[in-house]
Image (cartoon, rainbow over all chains, first blue to last red):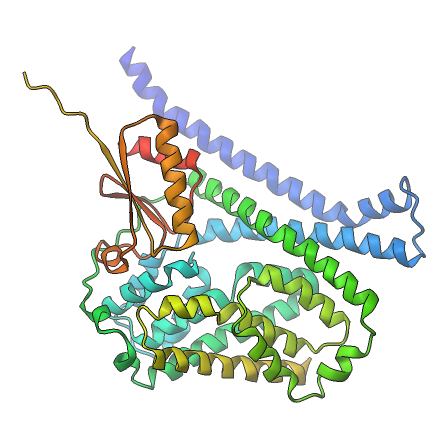
Length: 352
Length: 87
């Protein structure tokens, strides 16, 4: 009896793994079908059984609202799932090992990219900072990592892709990486070591403990949890943002923003960035508003500058970083990143 | 024959005192109640101690000093599985 039980355990495990893969494959198929029928299904439902007039303004608005919201939700679910599975192969500890002892320059590029790829939340900023420094990662490289992580955020990229197409999404990712690389490198040139709290250099980091290596079912379970969490968080913002968008659409005249904050106004970008720095929100809260304001003639560079300032620089994060950085370095950090965002904003306004 | 002392499971949540760390702490306490085990659930907010234990992704969870979770908040059900697997 004992032998059969001992043999059954690994087989049960295999069956469980096969079942998980099957479920993922079925979900992928369902996702593809839903994404394909999203347009035609709503068109049929709204203009058929529900009986809206496709030529009326209301009919078209409702069609656009349900189609767009469904599309963005589907994109979020699919892309966040894939990203979370991929990210489960990386960890902050692993990233630290990859960056340890490297020279500045190329390492800033690697750090910015790893900042995007590593699963990371702003509450890990302080332990990651100390851990990186104690592993011999140069300060400028560590800062490149810390700048890129919130700036090139996966929810922002998915929403930009869903709302404005892949060109804008790609432009945003490249601009965010460029800001993180250049700002980190520039901060590294200021000999920032003198502006770091001395205790940081005394911490001896323990052997990297990354936790147990997850198996495929765990990676998928983690991804499913993450998708549920993000959708729950983003959905109210999406609906409220679209509501505000509708209000702006109805009440603010078409030329209002174009006149005061269009591409021709040189003060629009600095104003948007200055407004965005103290504000603290996530991309999900900002982007529906961005879409509405863009429709009202506000320039894309100005809007992306505002969004970057909101997600990359925030008062709570500065307060958190104050534990390890002296005010001088925090000021330099904010100044240099803000300058980078400003340049990107002007650049976007010029080329788009 | 010496009677074995009842083993108390030591569960430690590490994090710099952020909202997510608090969420994990609450979930861990709920998981302990659900499992009906004798456990001591503690919270460490000292960042230097986290790093000296080799942990950089917060929040993290240790069961009897063994790292079982780092960098994300798990549900109390998932935590129950993790805790009973490493007891």
